[in-house]
Length: 127
Picture 1 (cartoon, rainbow, N blue to C red):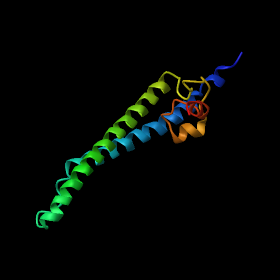
Picture 2 (picture 1 turned 90 degrees about the vertical axis):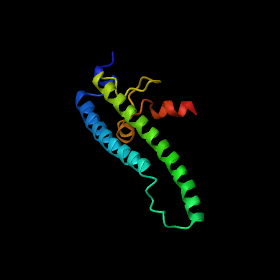
Picture 3 (picture 1 turned 120 degrees about the horizontal axis):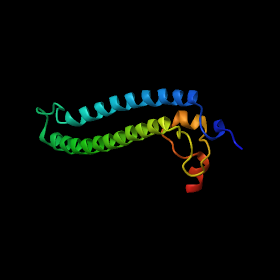
């Protein structure tokens, strides 16, 4: 019969992952604020005194920039949500267990992608 330590990460490991994830959440929230502030201030490019042709080009660029920033913000919000879900899995002591194979996800993978729910083996099966 397998011991509990082979089916889940130890409390010490989970605490380390929690610290990594908490730090990533703080950084991600900061980055999201930067993206949102860039989105809100896109119209302040200081082109009031430039030629009409450049102004038209610049307005088109501003629209593209807003769309791009909006997409970045959506992705960043999803990243934060995924990280928070990882914290819930840590609390439930299910963190680091592949949702397809039920095996432990490699520790190095979790350090790089702390919100991962699939092992490399499972990812490769999806291809």
